[in-house]
Image (cartoon, rainbow, N blue to C red; front, side, top):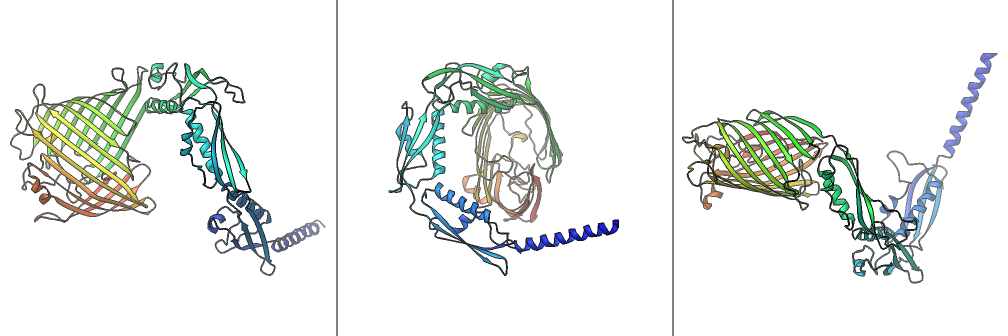
Length: 599
């Protein structure tokens, strides 16, 4: 009996499932087509993007839903009204094919007249904003009324008031629509609120950072009018100290909820809240390059020495040809001015006797400078470098005096990405004079490095030009090998091996006093995933001394293809550089693998 009862229940459930499936199929209407007519202002494809009901999907049409259709019609009406069509009307027609269970939807749109702006006014209790500011709004007389522009214009006016110190101002738009003439008058109702000036400054969150580190970065003090520009600028400066993960500045204003502006001016306390970052950091990296072989770097730093924002940093680099270690003590404010002052002690070993020189050097460097808000940076530098050991191939005279130099670097950098730029300009100009005081090598040196990046669709185009000039004076008769120019390789003229491009005869020292490198064209084309294809044309050379008439004659040219792998942490690249004006005895091409873009 028990088994019979179980069988009955199973049969019952199966029958219920079959009946529900049949019922579902009976109600399973599929959308076959949507037709929109009457739309004169907006394209049908644009309107369909606003709808939930879509056309036929891959291999199967979507289910039809009457509620979803009603929602779509409401969405279209809201869209039209936001564009100034207040009299819009949409009729819908639904035709069903009962044999195929298909639905055909037709939408008939009567757009009506579009409302245009007749006039724009400001309503303010105090004449804080001049009427000329109306010309800067998106909404303008005789133009279509767009509701999104009204919101943007209200935010713009509120921002302008905040830049004048009215941080609690309220701006609302009011419409007077004349449906008979299809025009509208806009009035921006302004409640300015109090003009906020700074009373006391309250610091919060700086547990292990001295208060003066925060206050010196602020663009305002007690009694100053507090504007939104001063707030944003001060917050950015606090972030740039690298001492804080979070910074927020706001006045503590207590006015009634109605926004009463009867108080024309008041002083309010200002709260500066920060969250301290981790002052100790350690970073490292490894890589490989065709010229340098395996390489590694290590950087450790502590950013809050004596709790006053001073930094202590150790940098170490290793490759087959270059080993370097340095300790840097940084002071963010120098002599009470916002100038970065760095003291650096370093030890360096350069091991490339075959192509350039072998040398061991140690020295100390003092630099002071800053980066401005206009992408411009400048730095003055004093350098005292001593020679521990120096050898150069086929060089009969090697100056082994110390180098005591003074230099200036000015750079402009508007690149959108430092590692993998696709837009912007970089120009770095450097000048250096050695030997003005004491026993030292005596020379003058000038270099300029210009780079331009721009896009054509998804293709990135780069251009670069680097020039250099160096000359001895006084008692010096030769330029130290570590100061000469060397080109050729993965980052200059890619048809030649590293530092192996020269005018001199084979066997002479491969260096010069005049240098020109032109990366005339570097194109990067997206392929798939993280991969990009590349093509380039390079030119350049170095000269001991040369007239301007020989520069273009002696230029060496190279061109070739490449491949780029743009990972989230680094760019790996492989280039094949072919010599275009190859000389007897030279190879046809050079292979280069390296990390980072060529320039």
